Length: 299
Image (cartoon, rainbow, N blue to C red):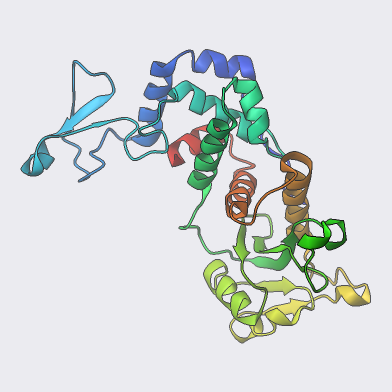
């Protein structure tokens, strides 16, 4: 898959030197969150001033109408109001970003020495939620669209958990689009039908694209109304015809499924969107030399 190599990350000794304690993490968070100077998270004012007796806390004079507003570096972040040290949060984010196929909450618990699995699960889910990007740029150029199904095979389930139907029966559907040489957008969907496909394409793909490539699935038959659209027929053994193929989105599905099957083993339908968001974000930042800093800024 083109561009699938991930940029070198910090080594553990490099990370340890950069973040020796919580204060170093707080100073880094200040720089990443407010690169142009600290601003009030409530009103956006840049006239805030630091509280000398409380490091990494500020007061906003423009919010005094409702009483003096004081805030810390972690306010309105995923780190706010937690008893877990910021260095521990940073370490968990580092572990998640340096594991190409993902890292399970159970493994996080073992490495970090947390007394409770729930602590690790709580942290990883909050971090994955921060990776979600609702304001992405619509895909352009040549775009491939496909869907996949996540879940165990029906025949391998216990008898009382088997579902009727074939193919994706009992599995969770994920619809995805990828810009050749660019980003991917993936969303868990309730159904794979024409209406769902129309909404997904409208949200993820710009109208002025060079080409939309899909397989022969009938759910995409209305794509050609607004965008140039060609298909390959997998049922007939056709996988590539010139620029028309879905090999890049298929490659992303492979990354996602290898992570879920090989690392997480079992992901519930309720939390699958969080795991999809993690893999999408890490793929889209695969060439980002400062991927850790970008992750901290998003949190």
